Length: 461
Image 1: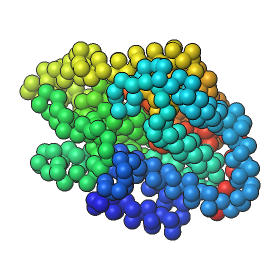
Image 2 (image 1 turned 180 degrees about the vertical axis):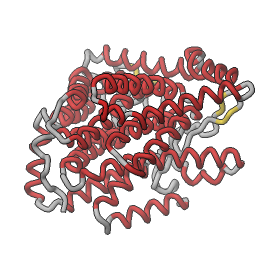
Image 3 (image 1 turned 135 degrees about the vertical axis):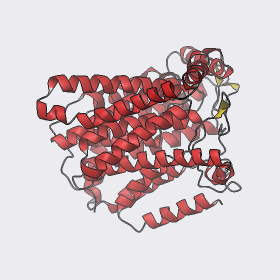
């Protein structure tokens, strides 16, 4: 057992004897450690349990044990899961996914070609990966449910901005640690944080420069997380004040730089999309609001402009920086279509779409095939029915309006833009239908803040 694993287990143990808020903050702090398997290598049997997943499971357990009125909560949770205006559509997606996994793997066994999770050509069959993905999706839904009630509780809702800020600060910190370790030749000291059995690319280079991976498995995972956190903290500034707002602004700018240093094509595309979204939002708000509310835009706008102008100034003043940046863009974006990894990922998508069509639109089950596009992954795994249920839920939480105060409205805005950027990035690199515990938490918080039926109830003891 490595030292980071031991420290995490100690924190997890401490959380069991503390207020549920400790678990809540620990969960968001654990998300940036995307390559930390908390099970010892010798006794895990190849099973990976990430620190964030362990926190999610602990939260689910703690919530079940810390509800002041369990019977009331259970009936409310059951009502929530069958109500299409709450989490009913997402629960329907879970049911469809699990049922179709066991149905289609039996129905199409040995009949349809797929590329399995390890990345090899195979035939449809019920295997351990199917059970694993079903369990993962159940954990993800449980996470959504827990965070739904966390946001709905008037007492715990106020901790959401702090949790999002903690996540961004820890993520930026892991990037700085990785950057310092690489430059000092001490990368071996971070091996204790890389304990999963996943295929990792932590030593990859582009044009002789080592890609920044933080404490995750590869640059694309770290870069994508930095872009999402950059967007989250940028919009979170509108819901904060004082030192917290300054910290959010500074960390947001740092995450922008970290995403650039990851040299990930997904991160670069995400940054371009994010800056465009932010520009449209700031322009719309400046034109449609009064003078006082326009003054409120000055700080966030300056943060974005300073980050962009600083980058442009660096390219203009540093010798050869502009040429190097141009070569980097060519290598990561424009020449991407001719790379072997791009060809391989397009083969994943092509095979997944072929499996979907061969199944008559039913899909081939969770964990049967992999893709390089979340839309394709959901469609090929859960079929038309699952795809419609999931994206109906996502569309609903993005467009529905709720009668809330201005502070909650700003938090809803933050979470909505985070959902949008995560979906965009997943469309470029999502490999399976499971949306993961991190995105589950965001969806649960957003759905909870929008829910009028559960607002101002006190669920937690």
